[in-house]
Every structure is written in structure tokens, then in C-alpha cells.
Length: 312
Image (cartoon, helix red, strand yellow):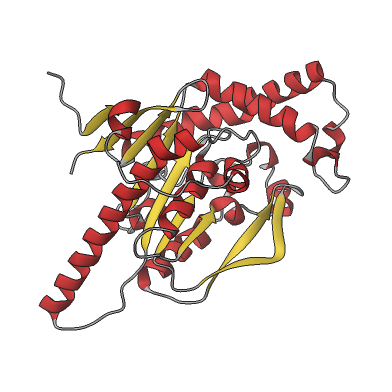
């Protein structure tokens, strides 16, 4: 028998792990959580995401118990620090939807924890800096993020710092908003979602210099996975959807593409995918998959078909 550090379950096996009857999410809530393509269904929530939220709650409670026991052993009462969940995956694979639904379900759990969601888009360098460094065509690649600022944020979270400020990003203007910030203050759980949050960086460097990675501060790591051709198809679908909606706004960075016909839009989206997003996926994102604690593998229709959970 082939051994693996992961336990693999198909959709039915995973869904059978959760039997609690919960109040269904409203149609409005499902629509909000689904994102641009609206691929989230009540059945998907019940079969996949409720069991996932239940499992994460077990891990959170286990860590709290360990914290209490350690505090008693050491004879002091430090303030408990937040539990951090990292969610990684390709552009258009649905990691934002996974993060939003997980935030929703966890925040309505038995303990009603305060759950904050942070996307790493806010830690991208502003377009002005990317243009100065000739990196606009590589936006989303590891070198286009202010990794130092992101590392400081997750370190501050795990240090118990209060009243933290996170820069915000606008997908409309395709840039970091200079005067908009998300305030994070004493959450119980923080979800950090981004393309390369599980990356450990390039090998080499000064062996005497300590190296920290964003994922070093994560308590639980999730990777949303799918066949590359399926993701390309979803990316193209999303581009066409945005062409008919957000791109029509005059202040949209992509307003100039609103007048493309279907064939032109598909060709242009395919070019962006092949020259930017697919390269980033293959070189920087996909190699981090096996570092996750849980891998959600999607089928062509966006439904999760397989779950791989790292053995404890």
C-alpha cells in the first residue's frame, strides 16, 4: 500500500462526517459569498464547508486547551493569541470564496468567535512602484509584494498586538488604496488569503541570517486546487463577466476592455492567463500545495471532488 502524509476522502466520505442540521444560508448570503461566477450552492456549503468549519473549530479548541495547560504549567496568564488560517491557490480557483464562506461559518460557530479576513492583495506594492521596477506585467508574483510588511502583520497578530491596520486593495482601480485600511483588533481567528502565502522563498541566501516566512505563523493551511485547464476556463469566464459589469465603470482600470466582443475578450483573457497567471501558478503557487494541511480539489464545475487532510 502506498503511504502518504495525507488522508484522502472523496466528496461523499467527507460530507458524511457532518450530521448537524444547521439553519441554511439565505439566497442573498450565498450570492454575496459566491463571488463573480456565483458557483456556491447550499449543497456545496452543507457537504464541504460545514464539515471543514467543524474540523477547524476542533483544531482551534485543541490549541486553546494547549494554551491553557501551558499557561498553568508556566504559572502566568498571557493573553491568548489569534488562530491564523492561511488559504492559498491560483487566480480564479475560488480561494476567496472558500475564505469568505469559512469566515461566515466559523463566526457563527458555538463560541461565536470574532473572525477577520485579510487578503494579501493589500500588501502588493502600489502600481507606481511596480512601474518603476518594471514589474506590472508580473503583478501577483512573489517579488511584487511588500513581504516585509506582510511578515510584520502576521508576526504582530501572533504577538498579541491590538488595533492593527491592514492596507486595502481595489480590484476596480487595480491598485492599493492609499487612504483605506482594514482594522484588526483582538480577533479570535484570522484568515489570510493569497496566491503565494504558503511559499518559503528562493533557496540560498546567508545561512547565518534567520529567515521567516508568512506561513511560519499559520496554525492551519488550506490549498484550493484544480486542473490547470479548468482554472484557465474559469479565468476566461470571469473576465467575460467582468467585461459586462465592473469593466463598464469609467473609473475601472480595465475600462478599455469593456468594448471587446466575445472572441476578442476570450483571446485577450487567454493571453493574460498564458503569459502571467499560468506561469505564476506553475512556478510559485502549485509547488506550495504539499505544504498545506488540507487540500480541496475541485472538478470542472467548481464542486469539490476530493479532500486531502494531513495526518496528525
